[in-house]
Image (cartoon, rainbow, N blue to C red; front, side):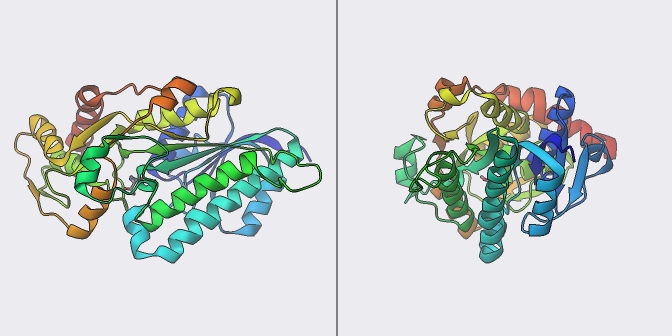
Length: 342
Ligand code: AKB
């Protein structure tokens, strides 16, 4: 039985999933198998060679993927985000950790079958960081990958552990065996800052206030921000997130000095964000009603990150700085989206 060479995208019905599937459709030279608990909407299903509604914890489904497809790359996007994971930590562990290990093992198995390394792309997060106080956060400035890996959320712990699992499978798998062999897993992770899309609104995250504020203003809905005015985070718009994943995937392995990279575009306080939204939507009713517990999570995440290694090792640079992000991508697309609905 001839197995079809494909790329597997898990969490395909999520924000990053849509963007990635569209990118591959534009590139047009890859067969994509999309996997998500939720059915893909028809327009995205049409862009994939196969769209499967299924669970990454379902061993029968994973065995089926192994027998039916020759998978050369896995974009493993399926995950419960930080706020949601705090309410269901056990489920978060199962999905975020056991699910990821299932897919890493699938990559290993696939590589054994077709004899080529399987590129495993993993969206990690600034949630792996844990700054002990707002003062420490201010002093830390642009945080490097090796600093402050002290996550304070289940999601952050999950991402941190999975980064280490990926490093282990890539470089140390079965190191005690008589003839150690490569696992065939070529793990590459980017630590995403808060992501903002013009076409989807996030759910279950703690950096979601940024997208929520913009989308609410465009719909002329009042928005009470759950963090304080001074809360600062690094952000990136969705096209740059897709660019980072595809670019690190294409980087020659010999150029990678490590397997986990910071990437970012701009850093904004919630007040600066409000000002930019108000510039586009002067009538916007934006208030600040901090949720102390969620706001504390944001206070433990860095105000900015140092993505110098990504720039050095695989020529990373975002296409959208803060001005382009708002003036050329977010505001025009979001304003049009809701104007059409009015
Ligand atoms: C979240 O808020 O959970 C995510 C993230 C920062 O990884 N958006």
